[in-house]
Image 1 (spheres, rainbow, N blue to C red):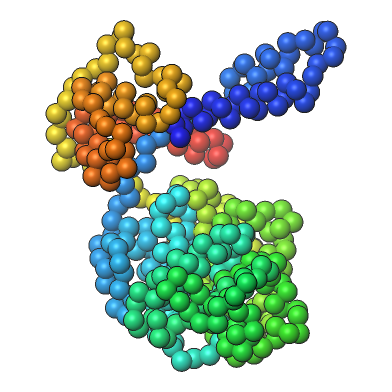
Image 2: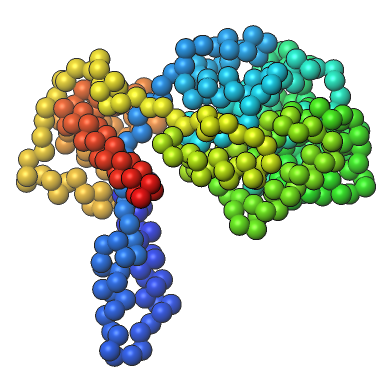
Length: 397
C-alpha cells in the first residue's frame, strides 16, 4: 500500500460519489461541482507529507519500577508519565502523544506497580474505559502478556474484561494471552484491573446482579480511572461520560481529589497551548489537573538524528527519469520499491528480500546515508516548524 496512491484513490472515490449523488439538473450550474472539486482547499486538503523521527529516550532505563521491570527502554514522555502516575499520590494526567508512541505503557506500568504493592487487598483498583470493544479486547491481550511474563505479577495481579459480547468459553483464570472474561467469576472475585466500555460501566453501576463487583471496594480502593481515545468523547457522549464518572465516585464514596484520572489521545493536546484541553478534562473528570498535566511527545530534531550519519551517496535523479518516481505507474508496492531502489542506489533486489527484516534495516541505513534524504528531513522539519508556528499564532489570535 503506497500512501500517495491510496490518497489519490480516496480523493477519486469521494469525487465520484459527489458527482453521482448530487447531479446538477439546472443548465446554469453545469460544471459547478467540477470547478468546486478542482479548486484546491475547497473540498480536499493535503495529502501532507511528514517523516516521523524517533522519540527521545528517558534516563531511568529498565528499572523505573523495581517490582515491575520494563522489557523496553522507556521514551522520555513515558518516563514523565511514570513520574506523575506512580503511587502513592499519583497525579491526574493527559497523555497526548502520537500513534505508536507507547501511550498504553505510560499508564499500565504505574497501575501494575500499584496493584502489586497492594496485592492481597480485595477490590477493583483501576478501571480502563475504551470506546470500542475491539480496542478493549486488543489491549486485554497485551495486558495479559505483560502480567504473564512477570512471575511476581502472574501470581499476584488479576485483570478482567467485562463487555457486552460473550465468548463461547469465557475464561475463569488468567492465561498467557488472555485475562478473565467470565462475568460470574469477576462478580465473585473482582479483578484488580477492570477493562470495559462506558456503556457497560453504566450497567455495572445499576444492575442488581453486578452489585458484588463493587462490594469489596472501600472508599480508597479505586485509585485509577483511565479513558482511552479521549477525543472520541464529545458532545452528548462527553456529557454522559462526565455524569457516569460522578456516579461511579459517588457509588464508591471516593474522597474528593483522590482518584487519579488519565486520558489518552493521539490527536488532542498542544504543548504550547494546553489551557483549553485542561479546562475540558477538569470538567469531564471532576478532578484537579495541574498545569503540567498534559504530556506530549519529544522527538529528535533532524540534526540530532543525522548527527552520526555519514554521506555515502549524492546521486540525483536526472530529468529524463523523473517520471519513474510516480507510484501510479506501478502495479504494486514491490515493483515500485524495486524500481526506486535501482533508481536511487543503482542496485537490483530480488522479490524474496521483501520479507526479510535485515534487508529492510539495511535499506533504512542506506537512506540515512543519502544526501537527498538528509536534505529532505531538514526541509520537512523547517516546514513543520513554520506550520506549527502559524497554527499557534492563529489560535492565539
